[in-house]
Structure formats: structure tokens, C-alpha cells
Amino acid sequence: MAVADLKLEQRARATESLSDWLGRRGAAFWITAGLLLVMPAIASPFWLVQIIAYAMILGLVALSLMFLAGYGGIVSLIQMTVAGFAGYLVAILGDSAIAQISLKWPWWTAAPVAILIATLFGTLSGALSVRTEGIYTIMITLAIASAFYYLTLQNYTIFNGFSGFNGIVPPVFLGIDWGQNLSFYYLTLACATLAYGAVVYVSRAPFGLALQGTRDNPRRMAALGFDVVAHRIGAYAFASLIAASAGVLLVWYQRQISPGTAGVGPVVDMLIIAVVGGLSRPIGPFIGALVYVLLRTFSLDVLEGLGLDGRRYQLLIGLGFLVIVLFSPDGLIGIWQRLRERYRRSADTRDAQMRSGGGSP
Image 1: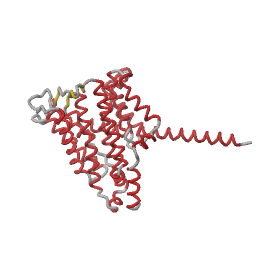
Image 2: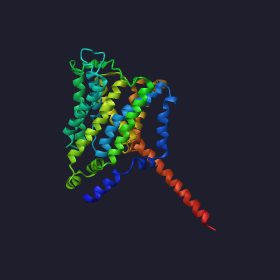
Image 3: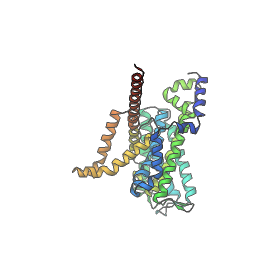
Image 4: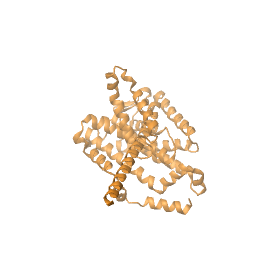
């Protein structure tokens, strides 16, 4: 593809209006959006916060991974680490029960600074691995994640070691206690909607299209004059911003943070969530997160009902992951797309048969 052709395609994709994009959404999109808006009226507080809101927070972290892997071909394992770092910074800069460490800044200062520093951390970590590919990128980012875990585990001066921080209360702003179930749900929904819309917009913008070009053929993109390294570092910065924002929501949801929040297990869980949901669409990580939260919440009861050790709930998660990957490399989104395409072909076939039958003498 010539440079002029690529730029024309970028301009055409980027200038598509929001109304045009929304107009192409199917019934499933609008039904889901409507259900999420009225969910507080039909769901209990447990389902509202412990299931749906928590799934959206994990989905935000997985969305940052999906952006890197799906559009940039970069499998990064530091996204949960970035979220955990942001959560720690909220506890350190803001208020918590560990008064001797927390600086007690107001939330409107602590949260933005935490997001900014965590984003810079994720960007610098990405810059260290941006010139590698495949297993080497995975190993470098996993090493950074492991180093952060052991740092928080062993450092008591700043991170309070194994105990971490507790008593981290969500703020009260505009007369609203954002720690209440209803307000926290809508806060999480708003953040998830903004992040989803931002990923959709960036993926269709010139930067996103060039990033996808570097994923498919980095040498050709470099020959066309695109800075492959700069685009990948920019992708890390954008993904880290999403993960850091999710980290602030996560620490407000849990009201505590410890080394286990960003341990090796949760780091790998984010990869599982993104792959199970599907790396081809921004909605995939949220679907994978919902499946993960449901399995984690209810598999304990299922296993105990079968007379098995309830602590082996991760076995069900692993089996579900294997089944989905084996039958659909594109995750649950891939299954949905194939079913929809099969239904569309069947409908087209029936319409063709009816037209041919109606036109015969």
C-alpha cells in the first residue's frame, strides 16, 4: 500500500462521525446499554457491585491489554501492575488507616497524581520492552510485574509490606458519597463507557490505524516513514492511562490494597480475561471479566455441592479457558460473530429460496 493510499484510508476512517458509528450498532449493543443503565432497578446490591461493577473494573484493566495485543500485537503483562501501582499511590498520597505513611492529600489531588505517575511507570516499562516481540516481551513485562510485587511485599517504609493499606474510603463529591452502591456503580459504568469509547475512537484514528499497520508489517510501515517504536510507546502510554484509572476504581472498590492485588496470579488473570473475551473487539475484555467474576464467585458453591474442594475454583477457570481457546481462538466474541454470520447466511438462503419459489410459474 502506498503512503497516499494509507493516509486516505486513515482520513476516511477517522472522519466517520459518532452518529454513523452508533447507527451501525446492532440490537445486542442497545439492549446491553439499556440493561446497564436500568440495572440498579432490577439487580440486588450484591449483583450490582460485587459482580457487575467489579467485572467492569477488571474489564478496564483487560481492555488496556486488549488494546496493546489486539491493535498493536504487543502482549504486555504489566497492566495489572500499573493498576496496582495507581492503587498504592492513592493510598500513599491520600488517606488510609496507615496514618504514619499516608500523606492525606485530598482525593482530587491524590487520584490524578496517582494516575499520572502510574501512566508514566507503564510507559517507561513499555519503552524497555518495545523493541522486543513475542515471548521476549512477555518475559520482560512479567519480570517487571514480579519485581514490583516483591518490592511491595518487602518494603515497609513506603508500601507497608505484606499488610499493605486498608481504610481507603471513596470520596464524597458534589454532595454524593461515591462509596455507596448506586453511585459507585454509575461511576464505574461511566469510566468503562469512556474507556470503551476512547479505544474505539483511537483504533479508527490515524494513530490507531498506523499502530495496526505496525502490528501487521512493522518493516513495511518503517519503510513508509512511520516511527514504529514511537507508535508502540504511545500505545503503552494510552493503555497505561486506562489501567491506572482502573486501579483507582479498584482500590476504592476493595477499600484496601496489598501486594497480592498486583501479584503474579492477578497479572496472568488479566491475560486470561482478555483472551477468553476476545482480543478482536473492545467489548471482549468486559465479557471475559464478567465470566471470570461469575466463575470466581459461584464456582466455590458448585464445587462444594459436588463434594469437591471449593478452593480449587481456579481449576474451573482454567478448564473454561482451555475450552474457549480450543474451540474459538477469538474468544467468546469470535463464537458470537460466527453464530451471527451463520444466522445471517441462513436468513439469506431462506430469502433466496422464497424469491425463487415465488417467481416460478
